[in-house]
Image (tube, rainbow, N blue to C red; front, side, top):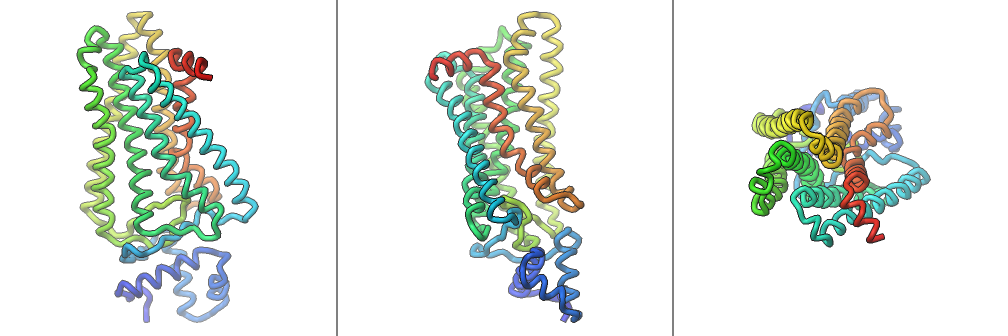
Length: 355
């Protein structure tokens, strides 16, 4: 029987599990099949290699009770313990930095202004995103097996994707706030009212969350490329060409590209306005420069994640791909509070008083 002719859901799931085992060079079955000379064994190994690099789909119908296997942590016990120690310290440090900014802004009434409220929301989103990564990642480092339930995988996908889009949307709204503050200072309090601030906060969370919910609803309609995920967090890989899903992704991409173009337009106008006023130049250095650094940093680390999928098909060390894929979840939550805490004098002064 040809392996490509397996059509039932049970056959496809069995094949997918065999392929996920064969992707692990250390698994005893891999060595066993490698030593066999039968046509079936050679064909199965061939399918395993081709599926690993994405040349053909290993389609499975995934029921809610299915489990996904994470293969991005194939390290020795000693290496896992070292990674766990550094990761735990990094998570605690991230919590400390963001909670310090959130508590400082919450307790100081003088900081209850739109710019600081959006900054506080940025730190809340950082805690939300790291919550979707670190607890399960740390647990997997201490566990002998790294598995995800189907529902758990959907939940982590939702948290991480909504965090990523919320981060971008939040930075876009902060660019709009700085544009109005510098280019239209006399109308700032008329445009950025408390009601408008509230609406912008709803926009920051609702657009990404609704986008991700719709994306997940489209994802669960189609089969996945097996149950083995070569990453440290759950990422769905769709093998079949679903036109609705890709059209929807194109529409969401267009919306966020439009946001990026708006940020570029805002900074062109801000830089032009700063040429005319030394006061505007000082305001730019104090408030816009941290935002610009955070924005560029986020774009760069997001591109790292996108390129990690491409590099995973090349002769690149696995640890390098893992670092690239995690950068957008690890770097911004640390960089943003440090940049704003050091550069914004009101926050820096109040943190010193609290300490």
